Amino acid sequence: MNKMTASQNMQLSEFFHAKIEKKETKAEEDQKVMDLLGRFTAQMLMDGIRDGHPKPEWGDGETWRFYYIDECKLRGLRLLEQLNWPSNEKALYVNLYTGSVKTLIDIATTDGYLYEYTIAEEVWSVVEHWEPYDESEHLKSGKQ
Image (cartoon, rainbow, N blue to C red; front, side):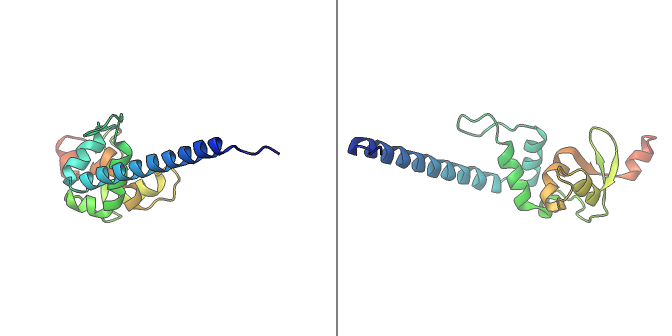
């Protein structure tokens, strides 16, 4: 049977201690980012999420996209209300890229990756890819 020497035990202990410290530092950094995004206006959050891969405000990471998504999920329907967008599940929204029109509930349940999301869980996708449908604007432009 292999027995570890005291030196090897110490090295292993230091390894685990360093790993725990790194994890705690990451958690503290994550909380700082979420605290900052929690102070963002709804418009700032929308602008960032529509950027696709928002750049970090600090640090050496490539994107804060997942933090933005998490903040959108935390706000849920309140984010739509903060944007003065309808949050009723039957409200119509138009896709910014395809022009298709769907109800808010259809966006969340049929456009969600697993087809079982709630509107609150998919609000980030609504804000990123959709906007409220204004029939009068589409009639003015000749679109149906």
